[in-house]
Amino acid sequence: MEKITTETIRHTAMLSRIELTEEEERGMTEHFAALLKQMETLDSFDAASVPATAHILSAVNVLREDVAGEPFDREKLLGCAPERDENSYIVPRVVE
Amino acid sequence: MSEYIVTIGLEVHCELKTESKLFCSCPNKFGGEPNSHTCPICSGHPGTMPVINKKAVEYAIKAGCAIGSRINKFSKWDRKNYFYPDLPKAWQTSQYDLPLCVGGEISFEVNGEEKTVHMNRIHLEEDAGKLVHSGGHTAVDYNRCGVPLIECVTEPEIHSADEAVAFLEEMISIFRYSGISDCKMQEGSIRADVNLSIAKRGEPLGTRTETKNLNSLRSVRRAIEAEIARQTDVLESGGRVVQETRHFDDASGTGYGMRSKEDAQDYRYFPEPDLMPVVMTDEDIERIKATLPELKAARRKRYTETLGLSAYDAEQLTDEPSVADLFDGTVALGANPKKAANYVMSEIMRKGKTEGEDGITVGVTAKQLAEILALVDKGEINLVASKDVLDKIWQSGMSASEAVDALGLRQNNDVGEIEKLVRDIISANPGPAQDFRNGNEKVLSFFVGQLMKATRGKINPKIAGELVRKLLTCS
Ligand SMILES: [Zn+2]
Image (tube, rainbow over the protein chains, first blue to last red):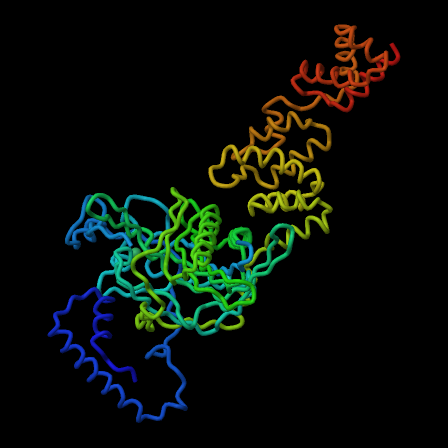
């Protein structure tokens, strides 16, 4: 199993857009390692004869007909945003 | 530069023409006021649950059937995680390891040669929203968010800009004929990512770059040409190509690398717990396949081999599915294929092009057109007058013969009346009459033209021509 390093934590934090202090990084490193250790418990289970499962439930084909409904009240949706203008959500400028 | 072998793989995103979005019932419509086609599901509110649009699944399978893919009888959904404001949930619901369609191929002609490109897969996913950057902030519009998309991935078997463009043209034609997408590039309903590397002959593949979001055939061509030139320069000057995601700027015609580099691993795909897998039986797949119409390549072949049209005419007629459908319908109603083809290619395409903004607007039904052609055939109207009839019935329910009567265009086939007119024209033009008697055959068409003018085209030109000749030679 891959070893959890400070690098792993920094990479994951970057992908999650989270800033961590050095102390938090250390804490997370230990926490992640402990979690993975727990997962290793599963290795003791012989899963060779169990087919891979795509979903924990057995239901399939939960589909709806293609019928357009009335759109939701825009004001209610925009009203949830921390910042907005007349018809759009406003976020800090992002250009990738 | 030609000593390098270019290897290109395409990822084509194509919006499906459903009524509603992929996971909610918001209308799937282009344009509209920002955020006017949204709801808590497609704007990513916590606690909302998506439900899959059955038609979108069927359209994706139909796309696969159209290009000979194997349809996965068991397919599932995955989350592709990334943070960007065009995606309110912070993940795109997509398909990772069990897509709806696997494999398939598209054949097309490029510079006179037949070429086949194999497909890797087609999967179904949701489109993202639109960002408008201005000043210090970005405005977000989620109207497009959740619109069903198919992502079609080719094998890296394309070797030039010409091949890439010809491939895309054929794919667009197949999807438009199938009725699953309009593939309107200017509305962004089809977009391509280009993966490109170069290497010297006999050497292993070079490092590839990915140029994202090209939304016209012209940008695809220019981006490929610019990237080949750039990578060649890098290698020739002793450098090495860096694997990166790039953007192509249409205005300047140059590509640029993006700061953030995201390899597949960084998307941290995992199975979507809110959606159940899709299971298809052989019967389901057969039923969907049966809804596919005859596609462009097959029609082109039938037009040349069965109907005896030229390759050029067959190509012209099959360019737009609506035009090909009109032609087929008209021939099915008894019109002569060659005459129908000529009429569609001249009058219908001319008129459709001037009035339509995108492609060709077909403003008549096969029934209306077949009647026009029958009236011309029977000599009740001539070709010149038929244009007025076409104008009259275009985008109206009027029949061709109603229009002929309304316009007073019924052709005069009365030999006695025409003869009188011919005598008048001849005596009014003694000079040209003498020219004809002196052996100048060309004068004949001058007289027919004068007759048409005098009667506003309401005369049978064939009868008129014969009478002019007869009266000029025996008087
Ligand atoms: Zn919605």
